[in-house]
Amino acid sequence: MLLWIILMSSCAALVIQSLAAKLGVVTGKHLAEHCRAEYPRGPNFILWVLAEIAIVACDIPEVIGTAFALNMLFNIPVWIGVLLTGLSTLILLALQQYGVRKLEFFITLLVLTIAGCFSAELGYAKPVASEVLDGLFVPQLKGNGATGLAISLLGAMVMPHNLFLHSALVLSRRIPRSVRGIKEACRFYMIESGFALMVAFLINVSVISVSGAVCNSSNLNPEDQASCEDLDLNKASFLLSNVLGNWSSKLFAIALLASGQSSTITGTYAGQYVMQGFLDLRLTPWIRNLLTRCLAIVPSLIVAVIGGSAGAGKLIIIASMILSFELPFALIPLLKFTSSETKMGTYVNPIAVSVVTWIIGSLIMGINIYYLVTSFIHLLLHSHWKLVAVVFLEIFGFSGVAIYLAAIAYLVFRPTKESTQLLALTTPESRQMVNDSSSTSVCRVPREDIVSMQLPQRSPTEDID
Image (cartoon, rainbow, N blue to C red; front, side):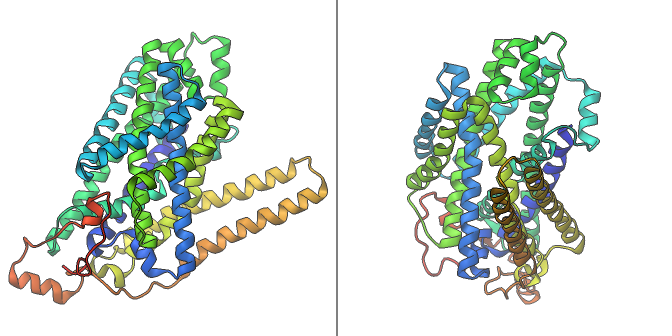
């Protein structure tokens, strides 16, 4: 019943990430830089803080997943595994000196490793095809906590920091400065995002299908049946080992390990671009990575020590839900900028694209608000606290929801500023000039601060090609 959410989230992610890439290609600036130029200092600072929280929330599941993987492979206690995940900082430091392209290749290898592991699991588990298709194309949410799981999956698929990342990475490539060249670049990045999301979609379908097939197996003992009622990463490992064999558990651990390392790299890159874009601040990469990883390790370690594997599993869901709640604060600026003729010129979103993207954004915001309000009301109705505590909780909770709604309304209804720097070819005069000179081979040089993780200071003339 969760598969249709994966399908819808993947389609939404494809549209949104394509818009992020288009923003970078057309304007020569990534999303965080546009936010700094667009919003006053206060809102800009708040957006930066929210983006940093999103990066930490994304890193928490990877820390816990890597710790579980080390536990499955080497029987290392989960809390020690959480501490050892800090070593991935050293791995990243060893790799980042080779530049963006080499790291992109390394991430591709990690993702293919994950895909290979779960393809093998899927082939052995043999889920019923009709049930998989039914889950993909028949929307339904049943059972306790289904809405929360749906929100967490949405946040895990359409991660807010990915919007900043995709709009920045396109600036590391040579982009032809012609009408045809820009259109082809946008089309290429859409195909590239589509391929990556298709692989991610197949991996997620495999994960859920294998879990469903294993939990529906006819030879489950009572203990395994109980584990299926409240499944987490640790229980999933034992289930796979009991039903499919010990090798299956090892494949699952290898996939978790690869997933953790790939997400660590992308999260660190996104963090660099977010900090550089919002604050025009550049940190040494190892300091930036260490700060992000420490902020993720602390809550993961506390929960792993106190709550064990079950608590760590719940923390993963909470972190993914945070990503969904924060998504509007990256998505709304992106939709407004790409729908603004003052920023995009003739490359502004067509009306049909604008309608579809705003519908997607409205659905995401509506689901988040619905969950917040219903969960809070349910908590009040079923709490056994004293009247004073309930009143205080009502004031605090409804104030928080009101602030959340007010912040979204501010981003939606605030008029877009005039653009002060448009990439050439966004006006008819510049396009005519290029067409007259037949300079279709002219390219914009890749930005060095995007290509290099060291983020060197740019010269004053770098923005003017």
